[in-house]
Amino acid sequence: MTYEQLEELIELIYQVHQFDLKGYSRASLKRRMVRIMNLYHLDFVSLKLHLTNEPAFFPVFITEITVNVTEMFRDPGFYLGLKEKVLPYLATFPRIKLWSAGCSTGEEVYSLAILLHELGLYHRSFIYGTDLNVKAIETAKKGIYSLRKMKEYSENFQRVSPSSSLSEHYTAMYNAATIQQHLRTNNLFSVHNLVSDGVFNEFHLISCRNVLIYFNEQLQIKVLELLYNSLAQFGFLCLGSKEILRNVELKSKFTLIDIHHNIYQKID
Image (cartoon, rainbow, N blue to C red):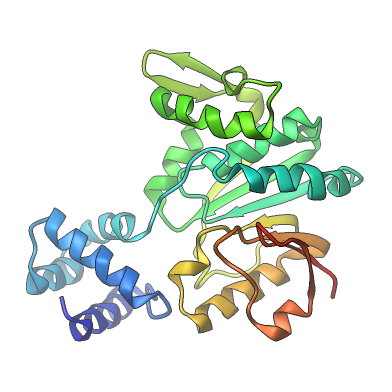
């Protein structure tokens, strides 16, 4: 696929489905498009025809085009940063609202729930998990994961909470692990597109990790403004180790709390 063909597809998707991919990184999009073509044995013309004439294909296409790489307690140092530098401050609030933006299949939401539970804060917290991938959100709502994966996630958890075991927070049956019900009551999963949808609540903490790297600079600024407007005064924005606030104007509205994991606090 050439970059000219990629641009043609981006415009086609926008005109037919009103789904805007114009601000996404071209290199990443091209890799995903080629993967879809190989996966479904389509050439460029066939892909265009499917996107135009096969309504059932578009949700499948979006599922494949969106990147869903996640795990529980991914980057344990980030959760340690929350535990030591953020949550003691939020513990002074009567209610704590959190948003996991781009939550994929929900592992980050449940990681936050477990961390809050261990600190005695989950009962007065509410976590929103959103993603544009409908299939991923349906998986997140179920809270059921591969037992093999959960055992792998245990290594991450041990670095965050050495005195506990991740197995205390799920029920194993055959090859599946279900997150315990008391860790699911204060979570809400829904579809939300950071590119086109607006502010829907005011949060004390927003985690948007490994998402902005797929956007160009202009779209990054647009999404960061959405996240800023969704934060309560003195709320925390968590971008993760791979992303920083580069825009000077936006940067001036935050103070840096954790330089290694790019955790910021809204001050303006």
